[in-house]
Image 1 (cartoon, rainbow, N blue to C red):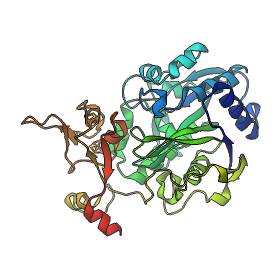
Image 2: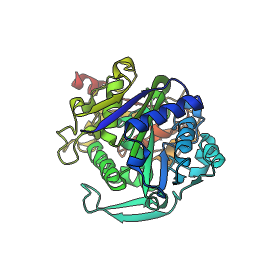
Image 3: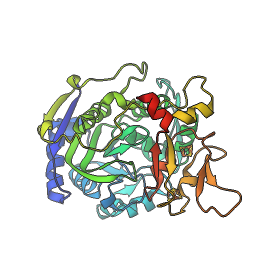
Image 4: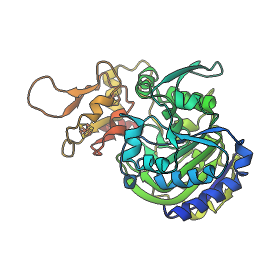
Length: 380
Ligand code: SF4
Ligand code: SF4
């Protein structure tokens, strides 16, 4: 039975976080049950973008500092890394306050530029997975995700955190190759089954609700979660925010998407009482995910009439172009108009695959996911 430890922690104060981390790891069996002395351990935070820690886009530096302090007292060789949405790991980590934490402790960034292709015949979708060298050169991974709402996958947590084990531009290519949300979820499972982090920790002290994973609002959830199973951990995240896990594609089986991997009864809970930490008002999309790419033989114009789509709010758009850079289709489904003086990017919904990378990376919360009126009526 998979186990998830819930620890109440209501501040990023170092000693409070350190004590909470120690307690959570001990309740899972302790460090020595999970890691052997001398192992090279990669700490894998969520460093989606170089945003200030107060925005809660990334794993909070205080959690990483506490974790580093716990593991540095033992005989391990630590590194850290993630593949940000754009730009270099070091630059994003610096802006997110993460690089300083590791620099102060003499812990170096792993190589997240070099691609190492790894054969994975057990993969359901991927038989060959291009990983960052910083991942393949480690003996073990600690995945330290951030508790956030997500427009495409409903939540971004423990399972999705391993998408960052793929280097930079490769991630966009996967969205193009696997536009269907269920296929994409199976890809996430394949990556998890290959890299198999030994320990999953989720920073939910202050989480992000609403238009996540970058443009949402802060919300105190006062929680750190611990598990050796990412699906079980995300199930508990769902329970904390009162979200039906059936709406989350990554909670479904890799081999039969009609089946859930777990029910809540399958998961052993330890630590603090979950009932005291549940927030039913957490703003997250509480409806079943849409399978845009695999909507049968529907012509694209019909799909566009009913399916959710990313929409730019031109009142807040700052014309920075990050969304255009991020769009993985060729030609781009979001671009500057060729003629005229309209200074903002414009969508071509005919070619848009609904990967929502543009929404994910907009630094000004100017892109949201909207369902057309006809789609809303059909849903009702
Ligand atoms: S990323 Fe956001 S702010 Fe920048 S151009 Fe696109 S919509 Fe506008
Ligand atoms: S426009 Fe946005 S949602 Fe559409 S393919 Fe490009 S990045 Fe993905």
